[in-house]
Length: 111
Image (cartoon, rainbow, N blue to C red; front, side, top):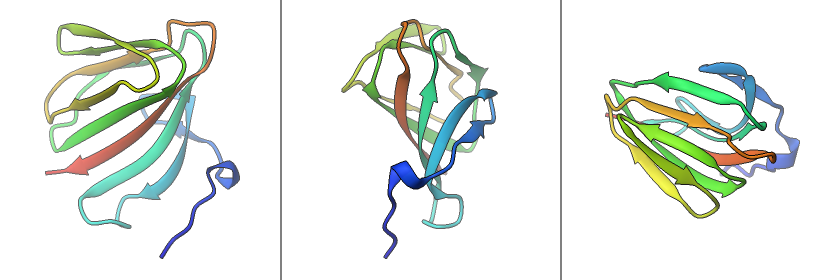
């Protein structure tokens, strides 16, 4: 059993933009096939630039704030309650288009 208090975790940089911070609840190796379960926080105007993962699915659940997510050539609005699953090989980019923090819970699952 592992109990985690999100408020006690330290901020870590997101690999696609080190200025964006995340708090990792579970990291690679703790749960089979899960690369991480984390909460990312994008400040107003921050962008996690377009990238792909050839070997994993990535799920994003917007829990606070507003922004946009581009998957391949389609752009979606992000607001609390929106969940997006990105499949291996799909290009994805996230942008905080609001004046408030955009908070996303993220889950990575390898093939």
